[in-house]
Length: 71
Image: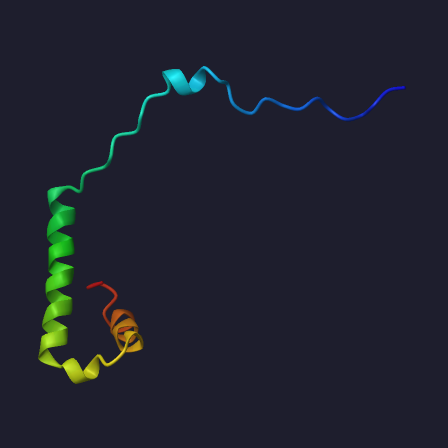
């Protein structure tokens, strides 16, 4: 009698993990750091200028929709 099922596949080579190279962690570049710093500065400025306008997270989300280039 013949079966149509395939044998259990070997999905990983056991030796592959020994010779695999570890991925290096990506460090943010200077321009990314400055853009993140500018974003934080903008948020802090908006919160200190009018704290009553940002009573909940929904208010911050709406500000993010109004100023997409800043967030």
